[in-house]
Length: 174
Figure 1 (cartoon, rainbow, N blue to C red):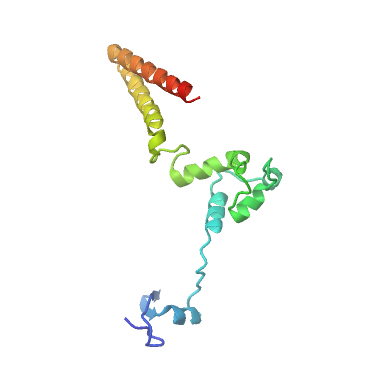
Figure 2: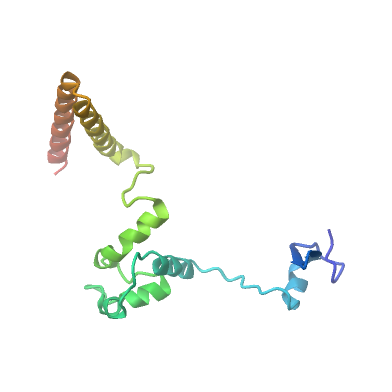
């Protein structure tokens, strides 16, 4: 479909206005849409602005300006307020300095604050064992609540063996 305005370019902007049950459709190319006063284009997408917006909306209660201004990174001196504006850290220590403010953001974005995704192959055995232990602990709790004590004892022993293997593995790597 060609642009209704210039008739030359492909129409990439399609707008439908409904005013008093009257439908008015416009099909314009990007250039003509920018020239038109009907559209307000802000084509500059910034990940920093996106993250700053998430930071502002991630708080449960009101934020005291004094607290935000007083919070700074111990290593690079970046103020938390500056981080909120730019969405950029000054150094790797900023993660630790701003941890209390970041954890709610991570929970909001990812649904949790621990990594549960793919794991590098080298670390896979360690992480896989930890996940297995967590799964077995949940099964153990369930078995105890159902009063299946023999099964619970087996699960307990399996958890202990896995934890011993983890400890041995970490001692060998040290």
